[in-house]
Image 1 (cartoon, rainbow, N blue to C red):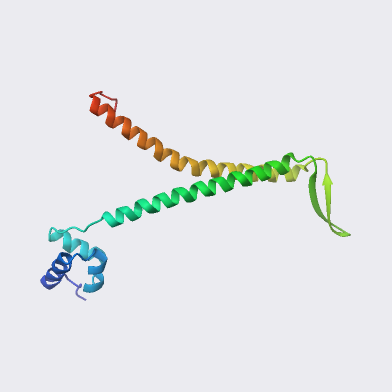
Image 2: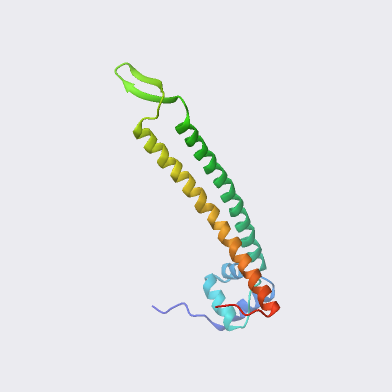
Length: 161
C-alpha cells in the first residue's frame, strides 16, 4: 500500500497557513497531517514557528511546579514533626485488639516495633523533603555557576575546563 506522500499542494497549503500566522498544530488539524509532518514540510520550506508562547508556558509551569514542590516539602516536614512528637511523647498511646475488643492504653515508652515503624516513617518524610529541596537547589547552583562563569569571561579570567 503506498504511503501518504507529501504533495506540492500540501506544501503550498502549509506555506499559506503559516503566512496567516497559524501554529504548527493548527496547520496539522486543517491539513489532516501530523504535527511532525507539518514540521518537516515547514523545515523544507525554510519556515519556522513562533515558540515564545510555548517557552512562556513552559516557564510558567516550572514556576508552578517549584511552588508545588515547596508546599509538599513543607507538608512533609510537618508530617516528620508529628511523627517525631509521637516518638518523644511522655505518654505513648497504644491501641491493641484484645478479647475485650479494641483497647487503647497509654504507655510510658514506645514499643520497639512501633518505634521502628515511626522511625522509618520519619526517615521517609525527611528523605523525600530533602530530595524535593535538592531539585530547586541544583537549579539555583547551576544558575550561580553560569553567572560566575559569565563574569569570569567578561573579566578575562581563564577557568579550568
